[in-house]
Length: 218
Ligand SMILES: [Zn+2]
Image (tube, rainbow, N blue to C red; front, side):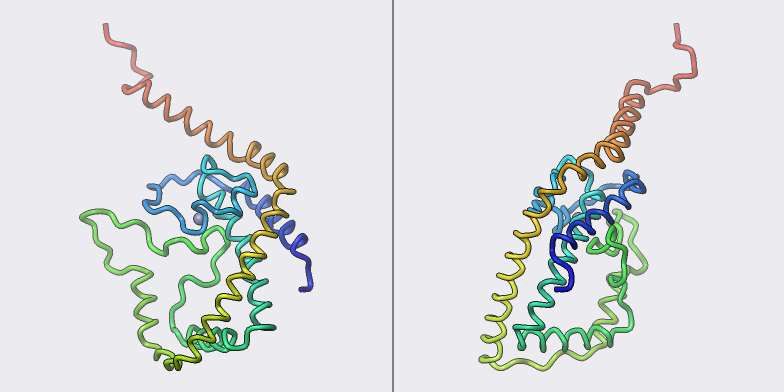
């Protein structure tokens, strides 16, 4: 690995801190399903970004950290797990053959989120981005089936890759503990004032159901 995990995590936190001042609370309807990457994430608890922090803020960090773990596992796989690597190469070639790949090349803040907004009852979409992607996927021929032995060997390598991913994940969490203070300081500076302003706005609109500029009747 050309850069240590410490350096990579530190740079990911730097990048997230540089992005955070541009974060704004989402004004659209919230997601119905919890994000699989962020919900209960040990990475986010290590970073001190609990459930009280808005999801957009969490997602920007959890995705950047996931990239580090993925890269480490990819390197380990290419060096040690030849069957899994061959399988991944085949899948990558198949992916490149797809004509439409909307989930690729997104900014970290958007990566891994649903491609389409939540459907609204009574207002069907004419098409969805995920529907178009599925059509492009169906145009590419499936990979040839594996023998039972090959499958068992592959499964073993997948298990090793999983173990390695867990090990790197734990290491990354330990490193993140050292960044908690600057993460917390940024939340206090950029996120909490926006949330307080939103709550204040909400309280004001609940307290004043009528136009406050009009004098009270009677
Ligand atoms: Zn998320």
